[in-house]
Length: 139
Picture 1 (cartoon, helix red, strand yellow):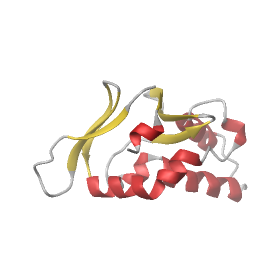
Picture 2: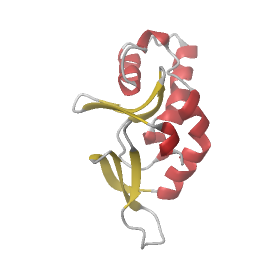
Picture 3: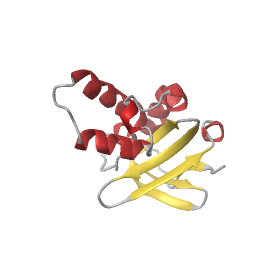
């Protein structure tokens, strides 16, 4: 199973923002300066949701989490307030953009998809999806 890591690159500084890298095995997925304390707190608050929750709209279960969210907003039914709220609430606990407010963080999703856990990105410029060991990540 793949190993997902967040690595602190400039631990010698005491203030945020800090440089981090996000990688799966040795493949770099993201590198930038972020508010590391906020990211850490977000993971602590959302660990159970990341471990247990699946994407709330069943129509989009055959693709990555990021692709599911992308297509939901492309196909949005503006009158379906319950679905809009459910997906927004899901994004708050599964999209790393919400963990790093104020940073130009891409819509990277992390969570359970079926019986496995994944990290994924789906945009017009970039698409990827990796499965990882959630127990190893939350050690």
